[in-house]
Image 1 (spheres, rainbow, N blue to C red):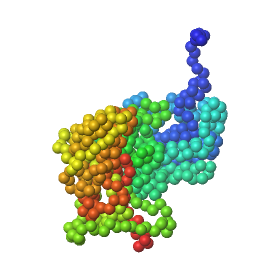
Image 2 (cartoon, rainbow, N blue to C red):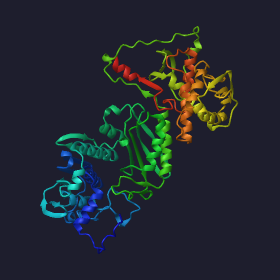
Image 3 (cartoon, helix red, strand yellow):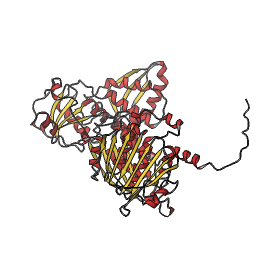
Length: 575
């Protein structure tokens, strides 16, 4: 089938009504877009109180009122014309200091809904009200109105049936509006926000100006004990600060990653990608923290005109800022033990039957000394619980350390260090280990042995389908003269661990895949849960863990350490 040439048509200028509806489609995608544009206008007007009332998901009615500076009566008709704005001084797009600057919000809304705007200033005794629908002026009259502006939007998308058909149910639209208002509240903690849905208040902030207070008002006071402060820092002309939740509190989506640049909630792609790379090793797969990053920089270093809805900005020094933020975030999460909290009422808990390991050697006073490490406060060893957890007492509560994950973290860092450092002398095995390889995996196994050889794994062919492993790198608790006892890990696990690498799919030959395989090797050979440990072994394990770079989480992102806070114990026992 041949393609026919289109008929020649004359070029013409679109009618204003058609052009307005096309422009509205770029700015007003759904009810939440209306809320965002109107609230940003209120913030630009210097409002200290903003109230948002919605009905039926915003499709029936949206009302935004504020106590800002208001619009003089003679300028109000200009506010609803396209590309009319008071926010762009001297047409300078390089120094945008307001949230809006294009003059598109109000006329775009009026093109697809009935818009009523009433405003007054402190200088004018009488306000003015306009009513528009489909970009047509329906009413213009004076009105009594306090200083500030009230915008009411009704019959949204009634004249655009195709757009109305794509709108999801009212509950989904209400949830999206709530998310938008939460983001705006976090970006402006000095403003008192009130959001009501069908006459029911669902969000109210105090406008205290304190970011932590606003976060608790948005997410709930249950976050109070989990919020960690990012140390204020300045790099490449940008100052950043913020808050992040501890590793025990995560979410299943990225919707709770908030980046605020010069008071604007946004999503810089490069920055967010580097930040997620930084926290990914310290959280379970698919989980994300609640993160609020506040960045202040000169307006000329930010391009806010890169997205039609201004949801994304471009920082001139975005990569430098992101790298500094990522480094601080990874250090904070890597060294933050997860706090323990009862998920049910204490009276509903099953009775605990701890089995504390008995000392395997006669009492030695030196064994009762505190364990001092860079990562933890001084800890006193209590014992072993259920042959799985090492219990320790610290100045701020009880510490529980998963013995398998702790050893896994130690081994993984040792293997990764071997991979990045010059070769060291390998450790001869007491007895060579014979490894039988399936014929289908011979080529892969030989390839893996060649790649592991620089680390210290010396493995030679021994027959048609077998290899003999003679040396390994120094592995704390498994092989080598280290401060960890050699009986922690099991040398016999080396053979199945190496075989498992040969059976892994070879879809990715990157360094990341190589590191993941080394982590798997550490996991397979680390001390198992259920294995009793002597007190010297427990002390050595905790000492070695406290000297790693990320003692709070295992290489897979699962917690290694839980801390039962003293205050929690006091509440549970009603002390």
